[in-house]
Image (cartoon, rainbow, N blue to C red; front, side, top):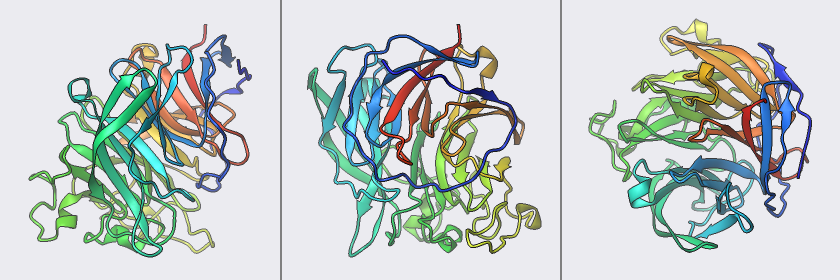
Length: 393
């Protein structure tokens, strides 16, 4: 059983900036039975649930099992309570374009998964020539045996438009609203200017019905352009976190350039400014006007310079950490842990950092209120670990 002492709690500080792409290292997955706990400076007890090769996302199913993606193209069904084998590969996935920041991305169950068994996947998809882009597909999970699962009837319901060169800034986080609409984050693909071009879904948040059709009340639903009709908000850079609060508000977390990582309260039809404004600057040192120079463009609710290099966003709603209900938690790659924020009307304030001494790619809440995190496999740190965080004894 893996054990490591965790550094604990850093309150209200800022950590150094750096890159945002995963390394190319890989390793075979190996499940470990959870046993024993280590304390994170009196804040968390931590249990390990095995390691995975370049893990990127996870979601809980209604029965408590976890669906988990590995970037190279493997989807796994993990039973935290089961014995060996407790990781089951799920076959029948679409072909994934793996490389750079691209590969198999998010996985989210349909709101009615208990009755329809439908899963949604995002991934990088190859196009013509040397182009690629994000896509979202859905299929029905079928497990006829304990160690044999597949997706049936897989169909692509959305494609990022247009496909472009390069392998960065896909975004492609997925979330369902309380009303059942499908929201997808779409990165700018490191092309910048398309984030201001609403004939493109690059640099946007997209809102669809669960079958991929466009809701009639989308902010640009009357447009003659079918791509424009998909857009909910725009002016985003590389949005890698998206989560709904209990009050129905949508929060989004994205990478800035050299500085300027930000959390936004996402509202329909709003322009969030990239690349016209940012509280960071270009990597070559060229300045970008700050948000406060353009009050007509929506400023973030909170931002960081130096950056935290965000990986994911969660709104906590459980009872295990009852004082944290409604608070935001960012998975930090460079900040190597969780960033804890409280919501104050339209604004957000950082209140603590929980240093897990490893880059964190994904954060999710289980039904019992425990917080689960996925360690990112990057910078030669070995395969990514799946951890369960509960209050320290």
